[in-house]
Length: 331
Image 1 (cartoon, rainbow, N blue to C red):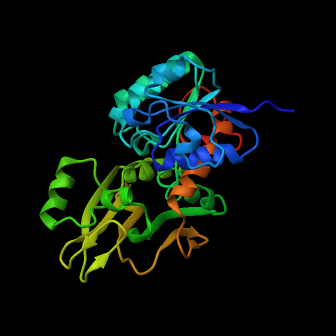
Image 2 (spheres, helix red, strand yellow):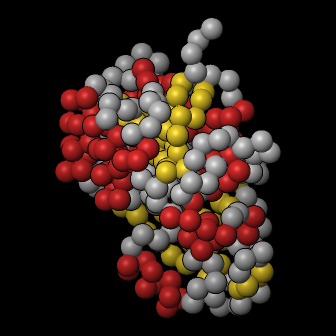
């Protein structure tokens, strides 16, 4: 019988707890410990927090340092932040302990251009310790980047790729609705954009990861973000939106190659969006289109791909890896 992979969980928000449930129901995994910086969670049982009927008898620690002093693990799952500046010290602490890391940090999915110094720090530390670091998720990490790479493998020639992800944000959790600006005024929306850390994180990462997977050298990558304004009143379980207020975001990421727009990624998430879908369109030989008519459930898919990536990161060559490194034979 193969021993279970022992996993540390760091970050116990909605995504982290979804991963807890998946780890518990899957054979071949064992949760070795859990941590979250929320002081209200310290000492609570992870299983009870995750809503599991029998609990897990795993007390939640309040820091990575405290976690590392307990039961040994084979890998760590890090679901704490979307931003490189926040996640880098956490990754380095885990790597320094000799642990491979799977993260859901959007900016870590492909940070080479946007955060070159932090990328070098993580890559060097991971290589020195002989472990791999990988960030993934449903988006970025799969739908707008890795999946188009897979689709491209049945093309003789790819000339351009367009991916659309359209969602009714009213069906998502409160944190997601507020993340896309639901209920803000136009002025509040613009202020939040100017402050940064707002809207869908990782669109540029997806553009550049997809380009790397296709073997394209881009001239430039850019992103725009605009509000989706409600034309009628909308109400969710968490937010009431009046006409003229923001219902969500419309973001577009573009990749330019040899003067032509070859990658276009459109993300639109708004309360009351009439149709949800994910679609990939590929120009070339042949013309290709792939579509999920009702869209992919983001939280469930992120939890699943994160857990599925744990065995892969244990087998990767050391360093900061990307989903583009995970093609069969690439390692």
